[in-house]
Length: 591
Image (tube, rainbow, N blue to C red; front, side):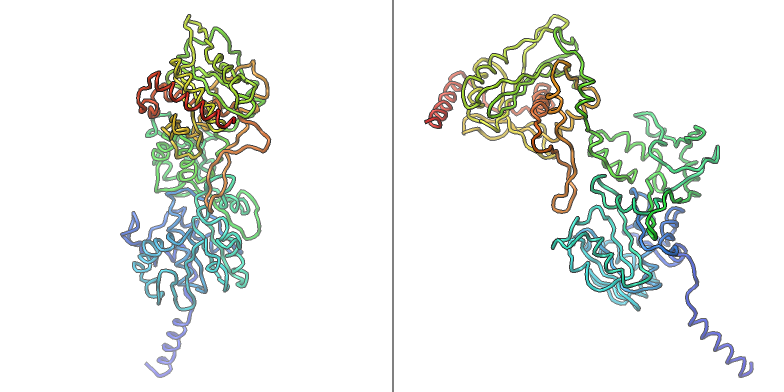
């Protein structure tokens, strides 16, 4: 070989060494260079991407993309896709990168259990990252900082080229110092770089507060379309395409709404293997937004999703399915929304003789300063049907005795049934929050007559049981604590479905009160929480009475802990002594 040939070979080698890396898609780079660690992955080893994951990853590199919004369910491989985008950025263009997690604990666990094992397992990342600790990874040409969504100083400061906020709906609504939303602070840091990217990803939570859903609406709203093997119709996989008989989720099929064909699991897998994301809106320039649910993924199945849908009975279970299986925000109010005009139009004549299928009657009493409101409700023993028989307002000063004597007379009311039976209230609940002394005295007087009667205190919180034993009123009479939030849900859903029938003889004010409260979602310390609320000036006595009646019925049927049975048997002498003590208290107050 001549000197010229040697020089040419050396020069060619130098050019190859200086040449930029081959221009391949980020998904191809990831499959060539990433290795999933065994300790944190169901499919460890060299990365193998699904068709859906490749499209998620490559969307980040589309020309003009400045924001990538991923609103997805669980079980689609979203986290792996995000790591592929992040790894490509570290080993490729580099620059200052920022990864935001919901809180400090999440930062620590994510780094220790997910990111560090990925770096260790993947030679390309291991050789590139030169220094690593819990909050910072440095490499030639840049660094990756990890931050908590609550810490404003970690989110603002120097410019970044690439920002990731995963689990956005779990992140702080506003940073701890009130500076702003985490995603807005990160956006400001991206302005310096002409080629920058913000990646927002999350399973959504509530419709009213979901920030990933709001950001998804800003983009081109891409859906995963699959082609029917029977008619070639291309359509997204939506909730109404899941077809199965209740109780038989293992027989679930995917319905084609064009030709009516029912695809089995093998067909679904072939369909998702060739599915494509298609934009359904124009959106803001540079904002790519993608939605995918669990049935778009090869990691789940028709039977698994159907089983989750089939078993979801409570509102929390339905929310979980809506969020984690369908990747959609949950509209809590849709489960329990009632309109007073509609409810009044569906009211039915309820009068003597009453329906023979009803088994027992309860009474609930709401106490205000100038009136008592008593509601009688009849129930089937299995709770499948209930009827509000009547709602009566007794006017008078509830600190005095007169209106309570009227209530005593009312409680003796009998209800004649179609089969000849005559029913009276077998359980009466009296609200003890307003005038506990008078309420307790009246309850003791009813017990002296052999009537099952309790003074109650309502407490919010979806974690509470329907009825449990509480403390003593003035140290003399034990009250019951009623967990009202779940019972309000049951009443609202019963009214909506017709399981609780309302009487046509009551006026519009009754129906306004029955629908006065709305189930809202509010942020509490940065986290969304459901709560019942009504507008200032509205009244809700008939709704409260219906809630207390359901609580009373739960004791009659034994579906709640029988708190009243825990008390010692009461003799007439005991009742008389406590009545005397309460009278003394009342007399001292009057004096």
